[in-house]
Length: 194
Image 1 (cartoon, one colour):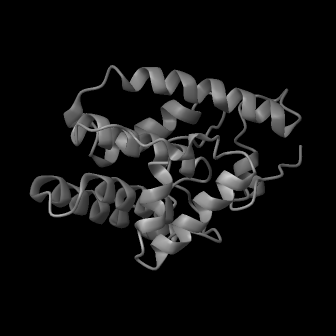
Image 2 (cartoon, helix red, strand yellow; image 1 turned 90 degrees about the horizontal axis):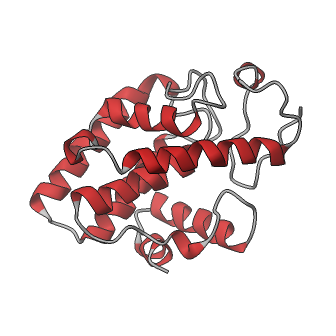
């Protein structure tokens, strides 16, 4: 199978493609269907977790495993190759630690508004790009958990769109992330609350 990724999506290396657990998948639509179902079950599972379990490094990997573990062998494991986006793969654990330290500080001090905490957290998590694939979906669910369970506010609407599919809303989301690369979080905050 040849995987065609949406604009802004990260292509998989041949060895990562070998990690597909369902040999009958032959189209992108079938892959998306299996991943969607796996993600749906993970979304149900997060309702059962304790708040104290969220902002710790093992949970970041565990959530990815819950979201993609029925589809990909490497689910829940940090990537082991460099991509066109993200930090060098060797730096992932350290950068995740820095991010978690920052978000704990932001939450404790409430030195910035809640929506900005969520936007900064999401942006940095997806820019670290810890996994071979699924970083956007994983980052959005992690951010929703931060907003609801830690900050005790409404989760983001994410433009009320399927951001895994190509289209105008995905393009606007990517543009907002690029603006956040330059420390301008306003477009991302506006997008996630649209």
